[in-house]
Amino acid sequence: MSIVTVQLGQCGNQIGFEVFDAFFDDSYCFQGLCSKKENEAYQASCKERFFNEEKNGALVARALLVDMEPKVINQTLSKATQPGRWKYGQHACFCQKQGSGNNWAYGYSVHGPRHEESIMNLVQKEVEKCDSLSGFFIIMSMAGGTGSGLGAFITQNLQDQYPNSLKMNQIIWPFGTGEVIVQNYNSVLTLSHLYRSSDALLFQENDTIHKICAKLMNIRQISFSDINQVLAHQLGSIFQPTYSAEDSLHYRRNPLGDLMENLVPHPEFKMLGVRNIPQISENSLAYSTFTWAGLLKHLRQMLISNAKMEEGNGRNVRPPLSGLPALGKESSNKELHFNTSVANLVILRGKDVQNADLGGFKDPAIYTSWLKPAHAFNMWKTQRAFNRYEKSATLVSNSQFLVKPLDRIVGKAWNMFASKAYVHQYTKFGIEEEDFLDGFTLLEQVIASYCNL
Image (cartoon, rainbow, N blue to C red; front, side, top):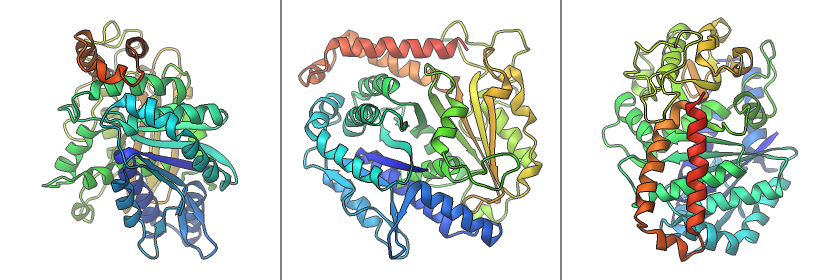
């Protein structure tokens, strides 16, 4: 089954390019340390999900590029024209001359209704090229105007027009230091709208990715391209093909549906995070060896201590004894020393994957009391290596990992709202104070639900 990717705004288009480039590199530029036959099956599965094949054999991304300014889309299209690689479709872009000025209300209330018909027509054309549609993967930020405001509007339209297709939004969490003065308003409005219209929200945090670039990849002068390549590597480690069952050598056909089934057991809990190890510089890769036992021990510790990367992940954190409440259940302001999960998915790729022992992830103390580990934990695997890593482990987790950052954003936005700072910039484009209050109420409920796991 195929996935249609919708790239929204500057952030969504720049990351989207790197994601398709990562899919292509992993599938076609790298033998994957496996047999030719297995590699060909892997390539065919990736192609079905993410690319159309033209009669001349050229691969075309199943993607739609949307921005309200032409600059980034033009740059992205020109990067995707290298001979012998992949490209975007000739009519897969929509852009205008005027951006949203980092104003969520302008993206949602002005650009959205004005360009709804044109954008949804392009979506329909892309959907018609799919033999079977798994759903939509929407890449966007939540801090600006176009990606966040127009992104929320488009997601709502996709839900209305394709109610039986799954929607997953990949959302970039802004730098804590602040990129835009009203980013907390934009974030509250984006998240509260997406919680109503999306099936799952997959978050990646700029601050975490920046640390990975600096400390694990040893990059001295970190560019947005470096950050986007790490983001794309993480996404590739989730979406590239894996076997459909424990003893199967067939690749799963419905990756979005399988992700939702494994990770979103209740619509109140749809915030997903990703951790991928190892992530090291290419120079170090040739001199590094990893064992499944070592990787999985690290990954489990990252999960329970809520560490976002391998380094300094709080090794002394232990799951609470069965029957005792996890810390942080009473109040979101308390330190969440132990990260309680709704559901976890571990994806293993590489040599000797059949020998990996995942017993540590089946501990009932890791999970909420209303789901048994047999239902809350799943594992996908393939013997084919990923992106030149002999062994690679990815954790996609629905847990309390974002409670503190979300609480912080809601608190900052509320403080601004209480003094009516910048509210007029939103009301003049039709977003009323009641819309803000609805957003605050919904997100406070989400925080409370995750705190009470």
